[in-house]
Image (tube, rainbow, N blue to C red; front, side, top):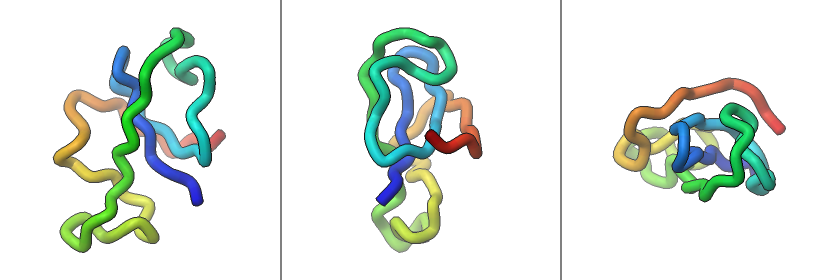
Length: 65
């Protein structure tokens, strides 16, 4: 299952099964937070939505890895 990940450095949000070694946006080695929606409030995991409570200042992308 692909998850939504947010870079802790630049806030970039992307879809991938696993986190990469470097952020696709800022190209830095970063920590990534899983921001996939797992609650009915934002549509559940099948929706492909992010959980807005977990993301602050993100730069969403439709790009997949």
